[in-house]
Length: 164
Image (cartoon, rainbow, N blue to C red; front, top):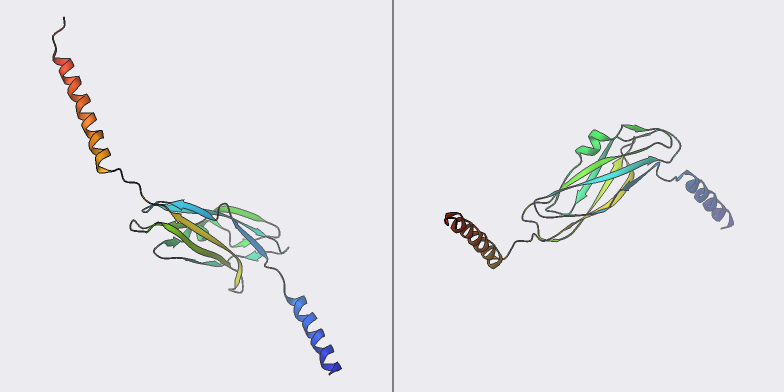
């Protein structure tokens, strides 16, 4: 029993030493953006190489709660394929589209960067707070139109009077 325990401890130490932190950090300028139905929002991110060696940025995966849609073209177009040791890069990273019929609420998602081996090397959550579209009440709109018509009529009457 004593020999097996020693072997287990050695195996755990070797495994722990081979585990390392992710080689890059990813942060968003704001992880929560607000939008109205029919709008698009752009998330800006900073990627920093923290491992001390060059790191490949080969792609990304992104997911968001429906009915929102994500366009990751900004990441693919803006970010370099490789970050050198301790290098940082900041730019637009992805866009989220909010369809017109979206119900107001908080919609969560996640964005991850894939590295040289195809695995995730950095990830971050994000959210879009969809607000209700404000539509003026019919009474308010009617009063506004009635007031504009009254002003127009007053102007036309004033311009027809002969000078005294």
